[in-house]
Length: 137
Image 1: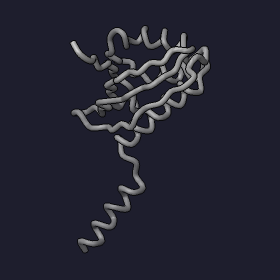
Image 2 (image 1 turned 90 degrees about the vertical axis):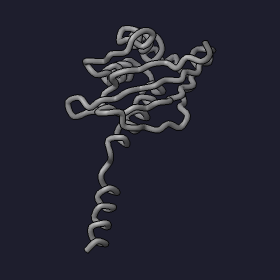
Image 3 (image 1 turned 120 degrees about the vertical axis):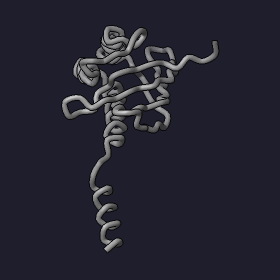
C-alpha cells in the first residue's frame, strides 16, 4: 500500500508542472521574446508585469516600457543570454534571487544581475518586482 502511494505521488509530480517550473518557463519565454524582438515581443514582455508591479527606478514600469521600445521593439538586441538560475518560494511569491543577463546591444555589451519576483495574478505568474544587484559600495 505504501509503495502504491509513493508511486502515485511520483507519477503525479512527474506529470504536473510545479509553480516554480512555470516561473522558470516564463523567464525563458521572456528572454526568448527579447531575442526575437519587434513590437509584438515588446508588448508581450510589458504584459508580463502585474498590474500592481512595484519596481522602482531604474526598473519602474515606465523605465521598462522605454527600454522595451528602444531595444526590443527596434530589434537592437544582438545577443542575449542568462546564466543558470533557480527559483524559490518567498511567502506567496516566487523569487529568482540571482538572474544574470548578458546582452550585446548595438555594439555595446552589458551584464546585469537582477532579482525578479513573481506572484500569481489571475491564474498566471506575473512579475511584481525587479531590482538590480549593486556591486561594491
